[in-house]
Length: 212
Image (cartoon, rainbow, N blue to C red):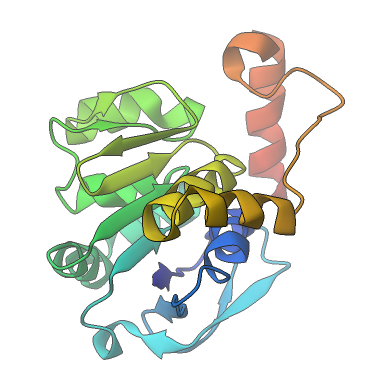
């Protein structure tokens, strides 16, 4: 399993699925970036280490592309080396997955035209109009060998679904317990429809204000 890291990515987009999938029997995980070494997240306050450079990873059974804020995902989509790597790896994957705005990077690689997919709520229209994807509702959407997850925390849902594909429902159920994924949020504002326009604007402002 190869997890792509790039400057400005969102930490939980990568780490959430990792916490589930790294425990699937027989799975080994490698983090990959343009060059090996530390890669900073969207806030600039946290870094993860990429084990290998893009040119060192030519094939993977599972590809996971995390999302990012506006700066990070825009830069990644404009980087031909990264986009070409995603496209080439996809040719031989068993599963190609994304979390949040990571779907935009799949779109930039030409993988989502006419494909049902999801992404972060504020990017749904962009995904459709720019890359020709067909927005489908849900925490995650499976279409062929592509699985896209909605915003940030939905990556854990997607990872549990993928774990079931890789190792069966019983193992996935045990992994859900292993990470004690039993969400009971204190508020019911986790989707744009539930939150309303005012909270939508505040949410986007908070994301932008935290970005470095």
